[in-house]
Length: 200
Image (cartoon, rainbow, N blue to C red; front, side):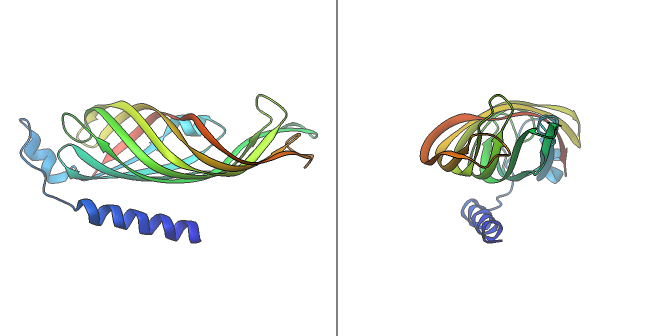
């Protein structure tokens, strides 16, 4: 509950700092978008394909070329081949950030950055070892949004993140035998985005 409250406070602080400014004049046809293109709600299909990770992302336009972003991911599933063999990539993650759109929001190329917290438990996929812990860091991503119609985009992107993690490593996903623990710095791929974005 404390993590959710901290996430809400950070989101409110970011919104207050930037302010919801009127969208300035843009390219031809921008007037129609200006009246409605404030919120973008998206679901990343690539996350669902990776062991069923539930996810949601919301963006809010504060300028012709800027959106604030907040989102969450959740996966609590353990997958078993046999009774004594399992693999998982469980997590709960929360992030806030911003995206820059060179043309205008919700269309074309974009680049973003975010502050992210993730509680995770993963292992048994490539190797027998399982690692669980808490990670906190900064992420960067870039991509392209294809405008299908006034209310729907397909959003493509890739991202990386780095920071620090407190972790415990176990010999296997189910045995509970600790083989390492401590803190470490990391730099890892964060996500692949193939998402549907609904624009309100």
